[in-house]
Length: 517
Image (cartoon, rainbow, N blue to C red; front, side):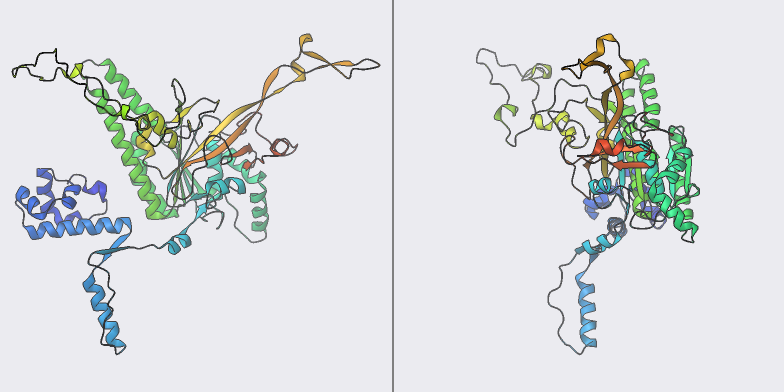
């Protein structure tokens, strides 16, 4: 029962203290209480069966309450229908009663739609791609991408838009937890004074509206190591959420402290010869910490109905080739079949420790290519789903374990846009223009140089909307970073839309005033 408080943090263990102590001695878990019979548990623990059944029923009821499911017994509905029939002068009861133990959901699709709240990106194209109008409350959403793709700019926009009233925001403050650099308040102030949406709200607030976002409604802190991060999320964050009614919790970034902590531990374990299994135990400890972090963030999102958004780094993926499409049929050659025994080989005696040969001599078991991680990761990483892509492949940090802890993953991409500059041209770069009668001239075209960055956003997976599709196709949305935040780029006039003078475009430098994620 050592995992009871991890599975159900709010379970009243004080009522069952004498039972739980005995269960911990014999090593029974919460899963054992739900799957084993009361008689089997009683044989192992020597506890009264009635007390064991009472504890198992309490654990099951707590799980149902935590999952939003409750059971309606036949006796309860039967008695209620009888009372209603007697009140109306009817002698017969309702015949169509649900079976015993029939379970129903607390929330219906209609009630869930009424409770749906999102945080807008203040751009209709990006909100449409995210599905439902933006980042939803009650879920853990990850934004991943390489450096300079716009992760931090995305998060800064959400810090301001969450303060807006519905439908653009939640009308609540935000909490920003950074693991790398402090919050860029200069960039936030730049967005407030440049974005037309915020400027219009400020003008209305000057006339008595009072609806504009403010830097005073953003609480920020820095966690330099994993120990301080765990302390803040466990003790300080719940207090601040209840005190200030926080609507958005941002963790930027989730992989920084884990990389620093466990990479250092793995290097120390690799250099130590006295602990050969230290590296495997180190990875197991990291897996347990990631699962614990995911549980903490999900509990905060569901308990307080707030949006939890984390940014994640990426690493280069090295492989021989792109994974090919996998057919639904499994060839017989992929099934592991032991080789036939040759008649010339003498039968081993019974004294041989391995009658069929040494395990190292047996051929390795082959699996179907669809089960390999190289083919599976295309569905949850965001890279590798397009076999004809020409860009380098990336993999979000923290691996498959962290991918199972989040509700949605949004991938940001960036590609260089090259042009020619006439100020860096020599004699070899001169071309003849305007030929014909009267002669022509020579114009300097320059060498190709980096002029700007093109950026895209795609939904890799989400619980409330479909994925964007393969590659950077029709499902992904191209956007740009400008002084007011983020904005989508049209497919036809995107180039002219981002190059107008006076728009405060930040594409040339890629970062602007503030840290670019």
